[in-house]
Length: 199
Image (cartoon, rainbow, N blue to C red; front, side, top):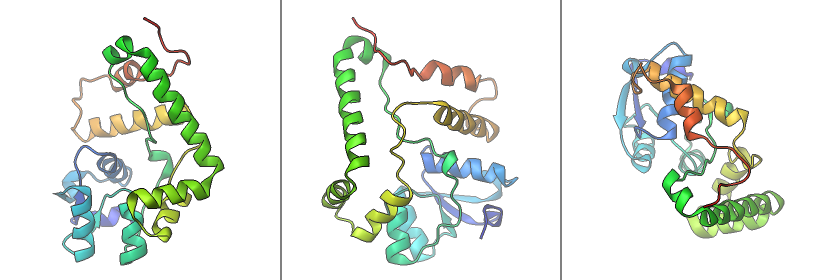
């Protein structure tokens, strides 16, 4: 199966999420749009259930549920494009940053420490992930080893490029108004400076 084969098919998706954006981009790359499919708007867990039951032909899902559907239910991941991911991005309201720069600094420092620790201590990461999610080891290994990206510590060109492509795809799909300067909005939202401002 390919993305082009989704034409006329029922596809479970949670509107406004990364998997939805990924679906829109994949359809556009295949010369299709959401008008060429029948979107079935469901929350992620319900989309997975609908796929397994055969109520939909495909599901634009996310991990660990996708990995679980593959390992436990025999679902097939038929399209993946890692460079279309938007990675884990931390967000903060500008006013909160202005009012609480020390808190934001602390969150970033702890996040970075955890990221580095996770890269250096896979077994501990896996054990913690299993303890929190209660998922089987095979599911956790599939997600962490194949699909979890922890090598980037800051927003750089790959993230900017992917977010810009997502915004342009959403604009082309009619989700973002055609008058919006997507690149300017992106530049106004991403602040990849090293030091945080002080009060």
